[in-house]
Amino acid sequence: MNDNVFYRLPRDAQRFVLDAVFNLPSYKWYQYTAELGRYFGPDTERYANETHLYWKNGSVVPATKTKERLIRIAPKYLETSQKIKLVELIAKPYISSMYLSYGQEDIRFLVTEPLEPQLQTAQNKIAQFLRPQTARMPELPLGF
Image (tube, rainbow, N blue to C red; front, side, top):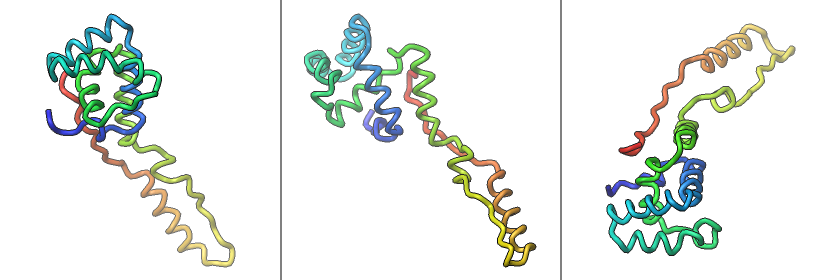
């Protein structure tokens, strides 16, 4: 477990998963931190429980190593709707959209220029826009 998953997630997904973890109901939080302790040792569990409220209210920002540990088992403790939202946030940058792929660029014709080259340019832009886009979403963590 030494590859950094947290920073490979889009920022929206990073914020979402940390917010979801910090706002787990108390009974789930303690189950969650007990599992953190089993994976990373009792000091990690104790630190998470001592710092939980500070993380939740934003007065303390978890270190990179802590964030990485926090998200490793997070999906297991999320509600189904939260898991779906997380997958959407992870996939969002990999899904082409009209705005991102085409940039909403207008096609303009100049009356002072020959029409045929302008039509060819417009056709090429439209064909490029309609071409299927290939995207590869990163793998989801084990146990998701």
